[in-house]
Amino acid sequence: MNSLSQHKAFILLLTLVSIAFVWLLLPFYGAVLWAVILAILFQPMQRRLERRLHGRRNWAALISVAACVFIVILPITLIFGAMVREGASVYQRVGSGDIDFNQYVQQFQGSLPVSVQDWLGDAGFGSLSDISNRLASALEQGSRLIATHMLSIGQNTLQFLVSTGIMLYLLFFLFRDGRSLGQMIRITIPLSDEYTYKLIDKFTAVVRATVKGNVIIAIVQGVIGGVAFWALGIEAALLWGVMMAFLSLLPAIGSAIVWVPVAAYLLITGAYVKGAILIFVGVVVIGLVDNFLRPPLVGKETKLPDYVVLISTVGGMTLMGINGFVLGPLIAALFIVAWSLYRQEQAEEAESLEDAPPSVEAPAQPQDHRPG
Picture 1: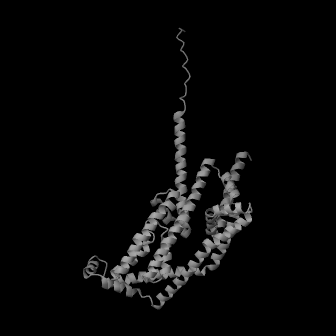
Picture 2: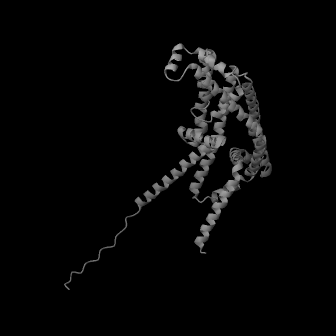
């Protein structure tokens, strides 16, 4: 077997074992992903700890992992625990009839002018009672779906603990050996140093901006929305606050998916003061938070247009769940960087061809005109 055949066989083997290794990681890809994300976010703290501890990387990594637990994991666990309890309470109240959506829809129906009711009938939407029944059924199904998901999150505690344990275990080694692993990856990637550094820099910038920026915005908007709902006496304020925080990951629309229908319902049912307050909070307070914080925290570092961030975030979350709000913009950013590098390479090749000196043709041989 010649050397070319051996090289092809080795490349095939390398591809197969790489695919098999990724397949092994798929059940816990979320744990691996968030271990990498937390390692990138807390890397500056890890380096400062190493300097203060005089190069004791094990102790520095252990302290960094403990900081991640108290700053990130413990608060998220407490919030989700409270949300699961509230979701279970909503589920029980819907099942027992304490929360009657038909009553809410009837209030909505009674507040509509007669002309609107006649217009709905003439437009082919059916009688208002049919619309009310459909709306009540849709609201009840939606509430049951949300509550059921909250219960399923609570029932998957064992899987959550296993994934968290794997994430923390991997995170320790990423903190301790992160630099050597990064150097090994840069050397192994079969690209030039310039391309490798640009891709890795974009990867880290997008991860930091997407997670740090979006999480800060989500927390601020969720807290503001949840407090506003609680102050206005709206049911399940914590649950809706967490929903607004989750939906605020979507730029442009975000938390408005929750508070706009609630504000419209309050206005239509005659609660004008509460509706006006909620609209003010949603448009002015939550809107200003998004407009002022998102550009410097997310857009400045990712350097992605808002429409690309929106489409990639929605697509990522549709395909990959909560992990998609990081992976979606990350894939979009790497896509743009890879094609910009390709365009730069093509432009350099074209410029080198233009600057190349023209080829000099050999002088023609003089023809012999002597008579034969």
